[in-house]
Image (cartoon, rainbow, N blue to C red; front, side):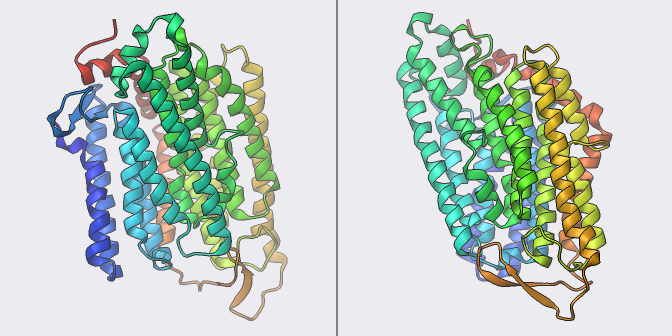
Length: 519
């Protein structure tokens, strides 16, 4: 077996308790071990992605127990892509929080950060539906700790709301798994695919109930309307660098939909045919439009970017809901873009809020105003899907994939109008934050009072012109990722197309895990 396959789960699982028990009182050592872990994760992920690019599906059997009786981790092109994306994002955010000092504002930041990575990476690699639930809970617990990092009333209230909604989702997840197990007698994903295909059509009522409940769970994780209520307040009130990491968490829900509804409840399966797409498409379109309207009406910088993340998920799930190889390939390309773009804008939002507070109002000119304004402008273009960055290419791929669909005109109109509304909302925010700021006479004091992100009246310090460079390095790293995704759109789309083809050939996955294919 390839022991590299389990390393993305084991490494943060070992580093997190080591930081808590050994070096938590030494900030520099904590940072060194956390940063070294994320660098190692990037290197391991690159190796795994190179191995998966060959088209081979690798299986890691824990305890050398073969599936479906033992726990397995599975590496294919989809999981390798998501693991690499998560690892790169984690490294960039780690650099940002170290450079900005966010990790000093509360206890145990880096250990929680590592546990969060363990949960996310485990969810992408697991081949078992119950262990998908387990990793969901790991990332939920860690993300709650990160959400309330540095404290504050508003942040605590948003954290409680976040936990309540996700615990309800977790309860529904257990009900769904129990229903599926009662029908099939297994929770291994490959074995589920075999058992579901063998069930007679007249005995599938309970199976469909389980499939619907599972879809609702993943819709909660992906913040699909009307199950999105937890996201705007949670992401906007969390520390914004943490919200940048959370940009990958909604993708866990989209990943789970793709995995379960191509492998287990495939679009060609008679008993569940059209089950996901028929409900998911209208919900995704409404999510897209309401997210764009939320951008237009946002009066706080964190909420602005949070609604941008919701809009991106609407576009992504619109492509997923088509359930064709072409649309899934477009969704995968857009997944990488939207994750980088949302994280990039969250970091820019943190730079702004650290200098003049969270309100989108015309205030005095902030330090590094020109540089931050340029970064915000590029981030707004990326989020809205305007040329020349990769968001434009991603939306073109989604529009092209929808050409043969019955709702093609609704899809095209929603995506294009949503993009226009996003541009207007971003332009409004940018003009208030940067352009009108030049018309305000500078004050002599070096600080001003603003409502802090935690809801308290804290002093927002105005950084000097020699502000830390590392946060800007992290922002430019994400920008470089967007540029590279644009320049190498050809190879990226080819990989996405190969991944989609592998997803729509589930017998490859099943044979790798079980050694047999569906009858």
